[in-house]
Amino acid sequence: MIIFFYTTDVKIYELDIQFNESNIFITLCTNMEKAYELVRLLEKDFDLESIIAREEPGMGRSLMEMLKEELSRCNYAFALLTQDDFVKDDGEAYPQARPNVYLEIGMLLQILGKDRVCLLTQDSVQLPSNLGGFKRHRFVHDVAEVGTMIRRELIAAGLIS
Image 1 (tube, helix red, strand yellow):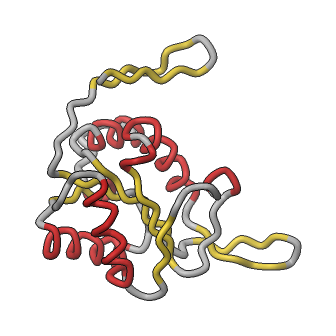
Image 2: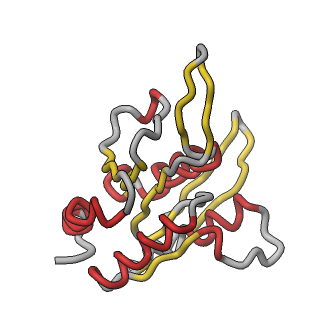
Image 3: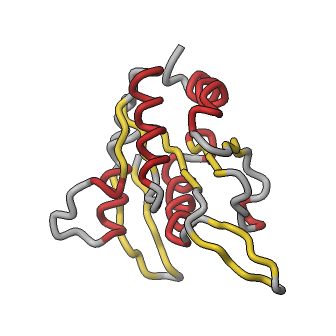
């Protein structure tokens, strides 16, 4: 599959994707404890390999280059939205994921498609309204709390039986 990214009439880059069915991409997040919980769950319970964007070598690549290249090695992705920032709106504070995670979700949806992206949100993390229609699985303390739902998503995607 070849995907072209454009801004107005200027081609930004071209990406030739050869999906690897055994790798799962995990978005950047600041709460690495939650990312490692997800990695352990995927490896232990489902025998799947994970790529955590934050841990991949830079090799002189820009962040966008690194993300698209590492994502091309995957066939499914989890967007892990943890309580990274607190935003104040009309005097009320609420938790949200880092803004970069939302950019990555857009890339994931464009490249993999909505049937190959799963949103995992920590407790009261707010989603922007344009992501409100996407199904997400909420956990309070540990990612393992949504392990059954993760299993169902992976079965539906044909990655496990």
